[in-house]
Image 1: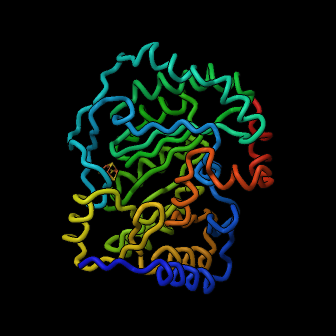
Image 2 (image 1 turned 90 degrees about the vertical axis):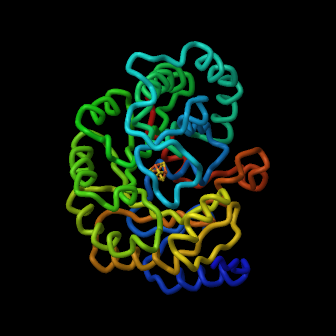
Length: 333
Ligand code: SF4
């Protein structure tokens, strides 16, 4: 059964859980709750949505089929499940794409040097991005060779994968393409040992390796078992995201799987995790693990949703917090 929790109750619950968690830190005016030294630089793009932010949901944004080699219950949009690469080696998007990306660069630069201070390039799914690797390499070459020099700053590039195809060959291709961060979703394989091995391989070649996986209640036990394992591997950040509900079919699948669920309204309806993320944070603090943990909850989605100039950051807050500035200056070309 689905219960819609009134926002007063949902927000109160959330804040009460946060208040109990000694060691919880906040940034970005409270939208970002985390424990540990600092969040991944790749997360800042969501809190400052008027940055130069080029995120590709492959294949939707490239007019290609949405394909994943997994089929998670909580996946937010329908996709084709298949194992073969979508984009064959050697296939190019071509100049039209480059021209489209070049179109607003002048304007973007004006904005970035006055308001924003940073670029973000990200590749994610309703699909498995590594099935589209040749076009990712093509787009990254454009960002590194054209956009970075034009902006005068090295943008932060990240890819979000379920980790199944993160073999040495693909890791080295991502390294060569100039990725700063690889984010891996072990929940997609029920935390398989193959994906842990791929994480172990990735930390040797990619500067920042993050685990990003949902606060999915059936994963509770596996999530807790994961915490010492990723410490041993050398993961820098853990991102636990609340399940966003974006469609009726997805909601039905979740309801069938879990029975009772509670939703509350943020920008998207989100699923209350019953305090799972705070419990994980507490465990990480108690055990003294060195990676940071961010609670990617409905409040994050809220600030992330402000993708236009009407963002309250832009309206009310032309002055950006110090970490934003620092971030840009540390990443000169
Ligand atoms: S791995 Fe990601 S894209 Fe694939 S089914 Fe799971 S949630 Fe969806």
